[in-house]
Amino acid sequence: MQLGHSTKDRILIIRPQMERLGTNEVPKFKENVIQLINESKRHDVVFDLNQLQYIDSSGVGSLLSLLRLLNARGGELKLAGVTPPIRTAMELVSLHRIFEIFKTTDDAVDSFNP
Image 1 (cartoon, one colour):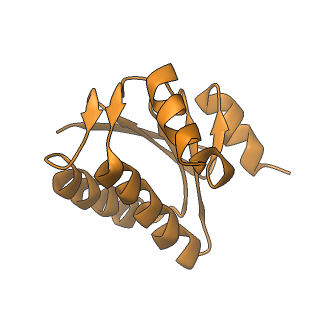
Image 2 (image 1 turned 120 degrees about the vertical axis):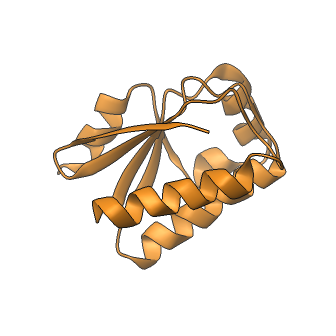
């Protein structure tokens, strides 16, 4: 599993290079993301999900877990580039009320700056 990443201002942008985030992918995904967050020492994160086409309940759970981790460290997690199938899945379980979702990573990054 590959995670592209970059930083803009003080924000860590993570780009999962995968089409699905399900039960089989979640353990390695969470491990890699937490390692990346710890190494970068950043607590404000944007996930660019433009390649993701499928997410199941364990994938959603991993995003919620990462959100809680970042919130506990005083940070935030925002989503960008959410594909229509993922957006539909999130709206079905009202996750669009928990996560801030933006069309582009630039919009998400800009939202951190007052």
